[in-house]
Image (cartoon, rainbow, N blue to C red; front, side, top):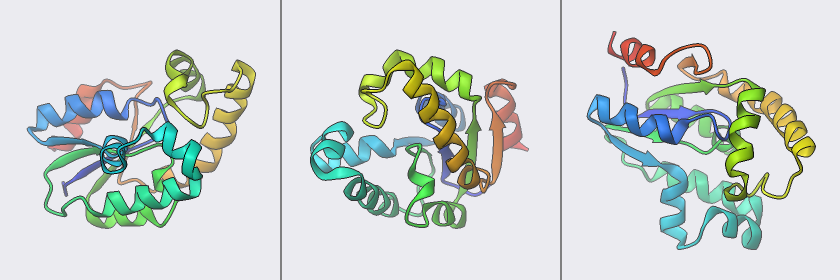
Length: 168
């Protein structure tokens, strides 16, 4: 296995929560790309989106991703859209191991309803709009996600299965 390990997938798929556990088990560092962006900018992702727009955010995201040292023994959780812009998916695959944390749209909907206020792209959507947003964007992003080194169906498998797969 080549490291760092990059976790990709739609928002609310468990990249951060499960990524922390995975990093502990592997005795790797854990890096959340969104937290790194917030630290660099001194602002929340929501504020960056509102004040500077998505195009600025996506360029910043690519820049911060490329500043992570190549030798980093880490599990890195990427934002849901990160693989879809600025050749980020190609960069990630050249540099380490990418794992697509796959979740069904219904699972994502249930998870997003609980904390959508923290997510600038969906914060103001009604339940029906949220459902449409997930379906539409999951379909668009799937082509990028499927380029991952590994796909892990988090709805159908246990996280311990992923650890075993990485260890072999």
